[in-house]
Structures are given as C-alpha cells and as structure tokens.
Image (cartoon, rainbow, N blue to C red; front, side, top):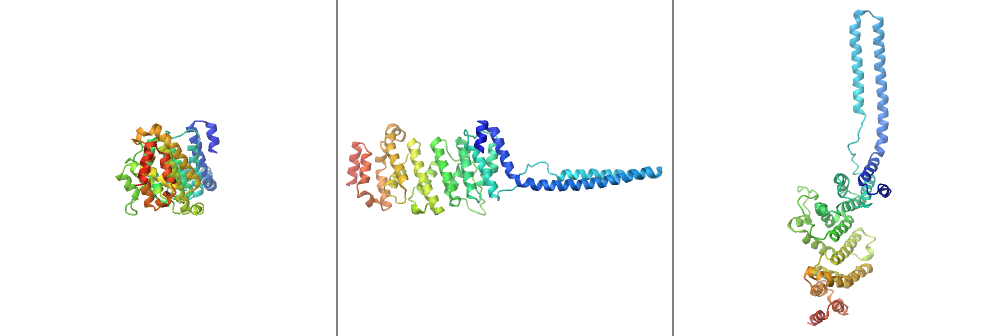
Length: 396
C-alpha cells in the first residue's frame, strides 16, 4: 500500500508522510471508534430526554404566568430562570462528555497485531522512494513508534523497528552517531535474538557507505536508559565509554568470527543456532566488503577470514565460495589502490604468521597444513620475492 502511495506522490515526502499518519490513525482508532460512536449515541439520547423534561417544566411555568395574578409572576419568573440555568448546565456537561479530539494515543504497546502493522507502515515509508531523514516530523515518528518497538516482546515488532531505525539513520553520519550505541547494544545482547542480525547488517552497511572517519560515539545519544538500582549497565556500554568505536567494532568482529558451535543443519530448526550462524555469516560478508572497499584493514581479522575458509567445519559452501571470490578480487584491489592507504605491501604475506598462530590455537594447524593447500594459497597470492619468504618460514 505504501508503495502505491509512494508512486502516486513521487518524491513529495511530506504528503506521503501525511498518508502514513492517516493509515496509522485508522488502525489505532478502528475499534475505538465503534465503541465511542455507540457511547455518544447513548449520551445524545439521554441529553434529549433531559432537555425535553426542562422544556416541559418551562411550558408549565408559562401556563402559570398566564393563569395567575400579577402578585405571583415574580416568583414564577425566578423558577423559569432556574429551569433555564438547569438546561444550560446539561448542555455544558454534554460538551465534556462527548470527546471532540483524539490527541492522545491509546496504549497499544501490548496489542502486538496493531502495533506491528503501525511499525510496518513506518518501515514502508522509509524503504520506498528516495532516502528520507531531513524532515521535521521524522524524529517524533521515530520516538513515538520505533524506539519503543526495539524493546517490544514481539520478535517481528523488534525486527521491523531495527530495520526502520536503520533506514532512518542510513543517509546521515550525524544520525548514525546519535543511535550508534543503540545498534551496538542490540547486536551484543542475546535477548534481542534475530533483531541482532538486522542491527549488525545495518552497522556494516553504515561502514560500507560512510567509512570509519565520521562514525563515533557521542554523549548526546539515544542509549537505552538503565536503572542502576534494578539492572547493571550492559558491559558493552561500559566498553563504549572507555573505548573508541574502532576498538568496539574489532571486539565485536572477534566475537562473531569465531566458528559457530551449532552444526549447520540446526540453523533452520533452532533459534539460537539460526542467530549464531547468521551473525557469523553477516560478519564474514560485511568484513569482506568493507575491506575490499578500502575502509578497513587488519591483519589479524584478515587471518580469521583465511582460517574460516580453510579450517572451519560448520560453514556452508556458499559462504566459502563468497570468501574465495573475495580473496581473488582483494589480491588485485589491494595491489592497485590500497597499498599506500594501509602501509602494507601484501595482505596475504602480512597475515601469514597470524594465520598459523590462530590455526595452532584452534588445534587445526596440522590438519590444514599437511595437505600443502594452505601454503600453496599463500605462495600463489604473493609476489616472487615474497613467496620465497613464505616457503622459508614454512620449513623453519
């Protein structure tokens, strides 16, 4: 539906946002309106009965004025004034009883079906047409509908909230920095389940588009508020206070680049296994992308990609093929345009010793090196003078 509206309004985003609010309001008050209309009808019926009773009293008083002498007219006039005042009071009360505005949203955070549809409408607004962030009403939309959804008890609401917040932040490093710790916290916290995957996807996309230079932690952010009397502040947020973003990012890489514990066949049968494997796969692919673009280089993390390709067992063939393709491209990419950026002549030679150390720590060294495939890999990705150094180091 949002796509239809988007095609109709083209890039008139303010008008499209008006439709978004109308759709949300129609969902919120769909059931409430029926109840309100019935109540208003009953109140109107009661009001008519009360006013009719006052009219009858006024008619009686007027008849008395006609029939009685002048001495009783003054008293009757006072009684008529009292009846008129009673009529005005009834009318005034009716204005209070009949609601004329719907400024206050009902509390629907526990109505997951309605809330999910509202969040989906917000998500549809952000994914259609051009990127949207520089609109005055968007912060209120995000604050009212999306931020509460991050802590919803419903998985779908959490996921759509993360994706909507990601689309909102995507064009602007300023917005990314405001919500950066929110994404970090969701990625790190196990209770968010598969919402962690969406948050990690967006974090890596932010880095692919903007690089690392302008992405940083700031004090005036939207970190979730934790009551220190009830629950301790998450360790990841403490780390964010004491470290810069690059350090926290490499810390997360080290966590998610570990070989998945669950067998691959459990991925589609168990939520924990599904989250673990997807975090691992998203991290591997995202790391390959930001390294190939030239935004990031680290010999230790590059070594872990090599170890993943040659040693890890619980990895699907599609991911290994992706890594292999990255190695083929990265060899030429690095040589042509990244050597000067990172002060490294050849990333494969640079990571050789780290790779062997990691394999040794994981008890994979003997099984991987005995076939000679790993050594051939390093030699084939090295220049002639560098390959001699690798062969020499191998036989030491």
